[in-house]
Image (tube, rainbow, N blue to C red):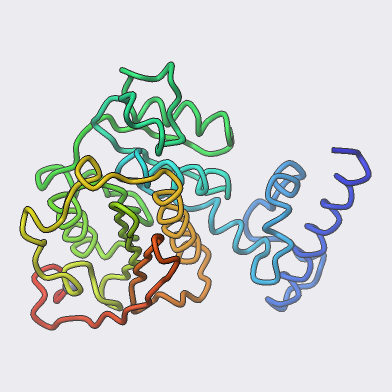
Length: 284
Ligand SMILES: [Zn+2]
């Protein structure tokens, strides 16, 4: 990039920062409460800082945030890449599996030389290359009912990119108990689902789906197949929902989930209502 273009982006980012200060009633030369974005951050995040909905306040909220990504596979790859790229301050990457050759067509965090290595560490290596300013914590472990509470502790938000209903319900229950925002997601074949959850405010995953489907009604990716870009669409939507929550932006899916049918190129927004008898979130 030429020096002139770099200077142009910095100028635009600074203008966005000044506009954000003005919107908060602060003079342009006001001393920020937190360390401001430095020149490298202004350049790295310049294209999102110039968005009308975005500014220094949103970028600082991301920088202060800690997110746990459960699963570093087909959904976790785009989620972690976009959250690290956007500047989330700390990312926990949880996955107990090793990279397999059959993963690579849909899991862009892992490359052919990574086959046989731990997914959590393979993912962490790439994410550190992408954004060295982000603290990456790999957890090579499977999340279950015994360790879920401990693993989600000290995070501001969880993105569930697991591929099993058992893990999905366990993550949902743990986040509801801790009052932690959660973004659920799933993909199989050509269809997927994305659901942002704010315990105590919006329906949780169990409110929307009180019971998992019968064992043979919901095929796995190994049975139904999946194309990499289909998983990429769903993971990208999860990352977008997470960024909205972290930055405090309005979320059109605040009390709904989104069904995506990529065979028909359609989306369906489905309203979801809290259930007073929900065993997971009724007390949240
Ligand atoms: Zn619920």
